[in-house]
Image (tube, rainbow over all chains, first blue to last red; front, side):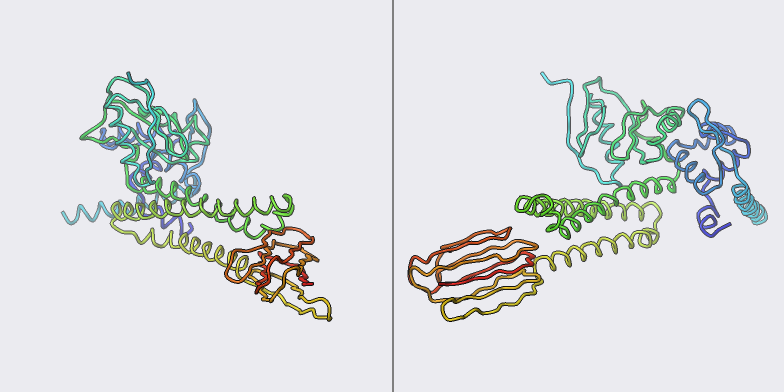
Length: 104
Length: 325
């Protein structure tokens, strides 16, 4: 993993994290918005400008790839690099969570 | 009776997009529904019932290139697409004005990314305009001659100053934008080091361009290289100017009598243009002309007196022979 990817995505924004998490199964932008809304009981509603910008940026950086288009909606899926970055983030958040539990 | 359409000219810099959004919402509440923007900043409205609409701007060239898919994403989220202008896309959603601002960006990182895309998009015209100034200056003579001697030369000169004017105007707007952007980034992230690092390069670039233009203008208008040789073979008096780059005035003074004839032979004029003049001390010129080609010009003195003969060159390469009989 090169320095640029590390600098931009470790740690990453909540939006980026949810995008990678959801794209372990192929999905389109609005699909991700709905999934995240469900997962967070409506607390997090990802906005379209953020979604569109993040998806194209992540595609350019090779974290996700375009699979196909369905009814004017682009379907993406995570790449090996994306999984690697996601795992790093998961480990970081796990540690964060562990430490929070211990200190409470 | 008022018309059903209204056009308003407004100028917003990139980081003032929230003011722009609020302005469109306010207009809509007053019964003017926004329809489109046209160059260089005319906002078009049509008469409607007073309505509550939230307006939002996104800057995404890639979105504009893949419009169907881009607009679909927004409409899935409940945003109606209105139009594009200069890289911006305008969206609206009904009923959400006021306390809870519904945004098309849900985090500051992506909001700042949008602003960066917009900022980068505005740098390109700066570079383009400066390039045009430099090109039209550097090749004024060659291009001017190719376009047709005198008129071509004048056209290039006018063009180059128009470009320079445009570049300066744009630079002023660009600087205002940069200042706003700087404030905005500081406000969002509480830190502007990223800005300073990323955009210091842009400033270096602009300064370098101004320096290049300065050097080009200096060379075109200041730098001179020429020699003068006196002619005095008993019956003809005069001198020859051999110029590699004449950008100054060559002035010679003579006491002349009525009937004396001053003759200018443009032996060679490879580049640039000349101004010839004959002036009696302290008076308006008695003879004046612009020269863009080889040729012969003469003036016969009408009154005895002390005269200045002046040859002014603009990037002239060639030979001029002046004789007095």
